Amino acid sequence: YRGIARTTSQDFIHWTPLVEMQANLPNEHLYTACTQPYFRAPHIYFALPTRFMAKRGAATDILFMSARGSAQFDREFTESYIRPGIGQDGWANRANYAAIGIHQTGPAEMSFFLTGGRRYVTRLDGIASVNASLTGGTLLTKPIRFSGNELEINYSTSAAGQILVELQDSTGKPLPGFTLEDCEPIYGDHIARIVKWKQGSDVSSLAGQPVRLRFDMQDADLYALKFNLRR
Image (cartoon, rainbow, N blue to C red; front, side):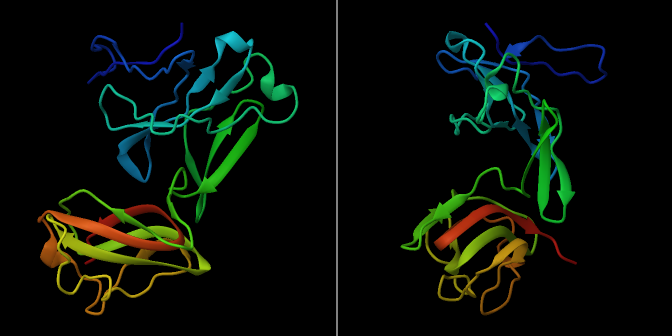
């Protein structure tokens, strides 16, 4: 049996008792988790564990999991993140293990490394996205409280696609000046784009209040969002 446990320390000498993270699904053995704070959002921990399928000989692959400092991994994505691939090398004994660390390796990219000298590259924040087809889709967040005065998104659209953003109160009522009709259509491909409405980008009047964010999307991917304090 293989598994992942968590322990913490204030001084690297005295450690809390191990707490098993309960990440395994039936028939899985997860280990070498490489759990680390994500450098662009350090309150979120990313993990790239090896999944060993004991009933299939030496078969392993790489998963993606996340956590927020608790003793529980989020297994939203149960599929393989990195498959063994074509050829016998990826299916051999001890073939697929990630190295600790996800590093920015370009203005819009980040990389991580696997055994065998393999480097895998994705866009910044590009582990996953909210995706909508050309026929359209909507993302509605839970009520959140934010600090700052502008909303920044990491996104990509096709030439025909777009994103519109609306801010709502906690009951889902659109807030004046921040409706879909007020939003400037967003299209293109940017790591950091400030959302603007007819009255501008300043959302400081809503800081500290519970608000919901609505994204109406067409042929688009939304990778990340955050509120900034621009001085």
